[in-house]
Image 1: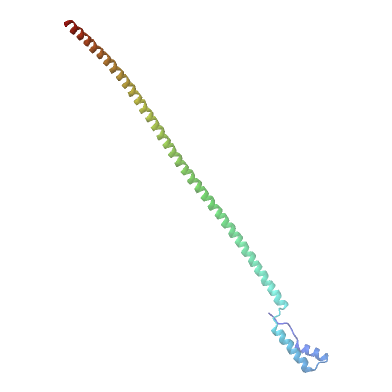
Image 2: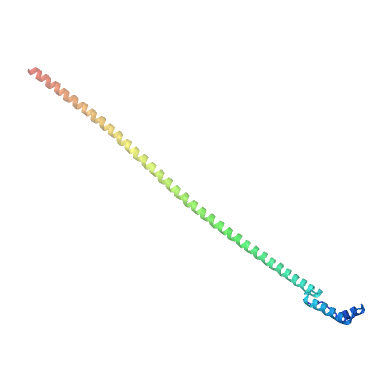
Length: 166
């Protein structure tokens, strides 16, 4: 900071003209000058200089803000692009997984359909075999009845012959 302009000689003369003795006027002048030296008083030039420095700092802050705004906009743009890429990748993966799951379901459904057809075919074969067994049993029953009738006829014939002999 600068010093306040102080003319000691003029001050002494002013005090002497006011009626103070020269020694007292000098002592007061020296005391005032020392108080000015101790006091850290800003001059108009100091204030103008500080105002210029503040203006420069404000310009620097504005430049930094502008730069930061541009960088933030770039980061947002990049981040938005990356998010879009991640979304696209996730959608692709979901679609791929969904297609794989659908293919597995279709394969399982086809296997179930084949198993049902096979079971139905086996059931039809079993029904046919059971029907054949019924026919065989019926045929055997008829043959047995015929044989029993033949045996009974033979027994009746034998009993008749035994009765005639007796």
